[in-house]
Length: 367
Image (cartoon, rainbow, N blue to C red):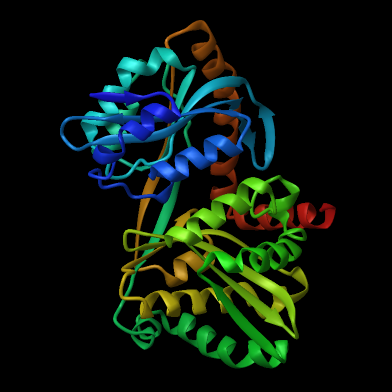
């Protein structure tokens, strides 16, 4: 086993690093080093390689680990965290190997792992009962296996979804008037992307909670790096020269992953976000290097309508067997338990979507 705890250590692992079948571009050494350089709360990159071709890619952060009810943060202890950024094809042995370095951190945070998979079970098994995060939310993840043609994709949807697709393909252009779609694939489009996507993102509910797309030096540099390597692709919809919607995606090892989106609420009735997403799907189908569209975690209506497969995932957090680690778990547990109970009550009364929509509308108005 080889462990990298600094930029120099990680650079030394380059030859062996390229042999691991990573699933996300964040695991690439250049991405890890760039993010470490750009963020004050990232102490160092982290890498672990086993002799069996498995690996862990991550970063060491000193930051707050929030526990929320809805969009409201209730408690957020400040911790030294190992944030694993690639939880896909890393190998069960590599996850188990993290037990030997757990004492170096207050907590290890994994990305969402497939429920019941070897990786999820291995991650949860790193610590004892007081170290595991109870009430961890379980979220759906939906994907679309790309068919040969866009027409085949449309034909595979339900009759109601097909009707909506055909209706929007006629009505949205009429409502927008003179409209264009720009696809940004190269670094010379960075300025256009951040200028125009920022104009849309500034009016979204994601901005009100400090999430989503933002024009920051970090995001610009990572986007530039991703465009240089072919890891980023962005789509912008304009109406009469004004940006009204965007999708920012990553493209890595055959998968187009939906990452960030936003639309001008003045055009909400016209479903401009969905209209542009269908162009994203059509573009992905036409790209022979892509095989899957990953809609990311969550179960929004468009993900249900356009996906062909789904599964369940859990974000696993394992705390160190120290007073600080176990104490942080103890203060977060009641909040996470309350959030789960509230969600179950909303689901049982079929009020989840209504409450979520109302919350987002208030956030959008306040932004």
